[in-house]
Amino acid sequence: MSTTLPMAPARPWRWIPTLYFGQGLPYVVVMTLAVVMYKNLGFSNTEIALYTSWLYLPWVIKPLWSPVVDLLGRKRGWIVGLQFGIGLAFALVALTLPAPKVLQMTLAVFWLMAFASATHDIAADGFYMLALPQRTQAAFVGVRSTFYRLAMIGGQGGLVYLAGWLQDSTGNVVSAWQMVFWALAAVFLAGAAYHFWALPKPAGDVAVPRGEHFWADFFKVFAAFFAKPEIGRILAFLLLYRFAEAQLLKLVTPFMLDPLDVGGLGLKTQDVGIAYGTVGIGALTVGGLLGGFLISRFGLKRMLWPLVLCMHLPNTVYVALAVWQPGSLWLVSAAIATEQFGYGFGFTAYMVFMLMVAGGADGSAVHKTAHYALCTGFMALGMMIPGMWSGWLQDRLGYVNFFIWACVATLPSFLAAAWIRIDPEFGRKTE
Image (cartoon, rainbow, N blue to C red; front, side, top):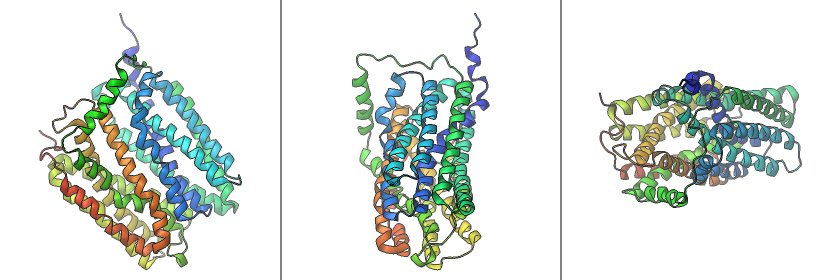
């Protein structure tokens, strides 16, 4: 008997680009756009770095509630419902911006948005595997990544530029950011309605039956992860590889926006959207593509130290920018592109390492998905904790000394890289 179920994933171009653009947009809003907004509203670097670093927490702990998405309802329903919820959260940010306690109220909304976004990640990735046959999944990995990156450019570049332009046009920072978040709300609510229509209905998208031994099996997944050989080396690398970058990342935007007399670059908000959100993200993407290509050719072990060096040495460009404070947007953009290219290039080592940990050296490990989610949780934790104190540190050291410290803070990353053990052939494409 013929059915239409096998045809459900026949039009992946209809929903994959929009789904992964929608996955990336709330993340970049919570992690980056919020930093720019709070800086424009006049909050200190200490406050911005501390409070926005806490917003990493949902991504740190999302492996703990990922089984709930399997146990309760269909992933298609989770996706559409969460997108409507995120759209409403964008509207709530716009409504609370004029409030007297704007920091507390917007942070509460961003906190809810972060939990919704992290849960949406779980549902979207699970739905992707259910809705597509394995060959199609592999074919569309690049499409997923491209549209996620486009969301970063749209949020970190386009929306930051729009906010700056609106500030100049209206003369009112609060009104400008309200308009940005109303636009985001409209886009996301329209996207949720679109996905209600466009997402396929795969036969496998059903709630997982809850067996009597479910919770025992659930905790076995965690026990198996922490029982991995040399788990101490693994955790050290996951937590320390981005130790310097976690501190740097929170202060790059405030550094570019702060006036020259306090050590910043004195750029306008829309200039930050161009230099960091567009040129920088473009360079980050190119670096990531090149890093992945070289690992596939030569293997992770052989490429590790070139990748580590390229990840961390370009941090010195911020020392140079802080010392010379160049007034040229193109020079600043070139410096940011250099650092972001190195970051994207070196970060591929981290991503491939997580695949190795989750799948085992021979790729045969059980619970790959859950163990990869645990790796991403430790990755988020490694970004959250150092980021929390970075603003306080910069306020006391000034930008020049802070960026010098960020270069010194790469030493734990080098030590962690020297300590790990990698299969010489892992990551290398075999003919």
